[in-house]
Length: 618
Image (cartoon, rainbow, N blue to C red; front, side, top):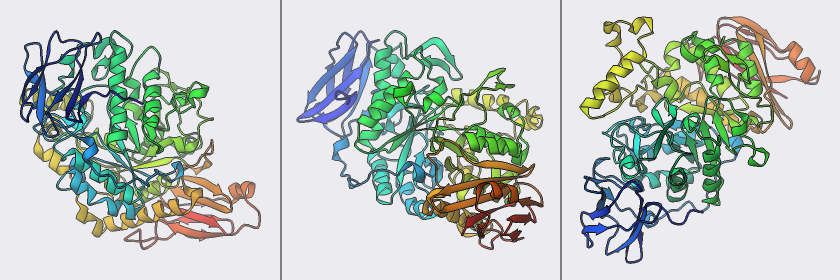
């Protein structure tokens, strides 16, 4: 357990200020207000850590540090930046908040249905308080886990969150730190777990003053897509690691987070591969008696990430398994650029992905010109987190359009059924549950000089696309710096009540409740999924637990007939009988229903168009 933490934390009679500044020859604490206002020289130990109790200082005081004779800068471990990342830090007492969630113990793995949300665009107000008011609606839809995109403070008033520079401070754009605590406390009362998305592989390009305190925070030894790599194995790396681990513990301890989603862990490069992740897992779990889930975003398909440390693994609870998304996107919409080029988008690929958890298990990737992936056969299926879309897969498209914008409603319904009945852990992106009409575009609010380069870079990124290759086409890509780009991405909650969105919401609510009511349809601890391709347009999945047996048949394109005669004869009693539990053409889900013909004896399904059917053995 970490005892001596970085930052400014109130103690009896004052505040303990602890900061790591090995690059400073002289470090001065500047207290702007309060009873201890003034300049305080900070003693430093051999590692460059300054640690002092300033009597008379208290919660609410604003302060900063002067490194040598430079400008006053925020505390690298500031708990709040009321005037933004360039302003003074504020002392926050995390113990002053009254928690009421002492009986909360987190959701079990099989119940996890992740809901990714961006605080700034989730509601019209874009605040923690406004998000809190929507939690009951999410609970009633069947969501069980909120995954909140990064809240660490960033430059400007709007950002995805992946440009955070004050890693311990919830963004003042969303409210006070206690507003975030109220959100978590309320979520727990409603039975919702809360996972925080955290970024340790880079800092944002504006306001990253941490490097003025420590010039060795980054290293050029390991380049990454964002520039230099965080220094995890060079000079001063022990304290860099300590800073990262402390941040992870801070969210678990001070905000009662039920887990963390670690961004782009493939860019946390070190000689002992995965060591920093093992440290995060160990300390995060030691920080609370509750169970916490530590998940990672990582494209490498490494089974070792999910394996037990006793077997040489890294001990993570889950990983974003993007192969499912990429196969689905290629299958449904024909995407073939960039990483989609590695996928054929066939139902056979999809069935194999559902069986294994991911598709690439060591095959050569044509895109990367190297092998990719490892054998996941010893990994429980609930460790694989899959989606039809997420912030990246929407926002990194030129116009930020959603999958439901570009495929037919019937194909969207079929894909949604598959997502919410797979043996893996499903993730949905905010608004997906009603097929929101709003895009999720890439937006920033950097200072103008930097902002110009961001806008130009965004347009260069898509220059290879035929429709955006010339200046006129490039100009149609939304400007990340424009406030209108951000505003266009805000959810419109009133859509939930009107067609066709209300029909989609009914489908998602029904599917999520079925998943929660029937453990056989939840995330599975089994080591393999049960799926097969019936033809070029259709897959079938079998889910079973105890006496509950289900077949899910999904057809993604066109009309056609699908038979389970061969599949059921191999797997189920010959005298089995079946009933239709759900079809995507039920009047609750389709404004223009075209019901499939279902022979429950064989069983055989004749689809009038794309769709899905769930059968239950009786």
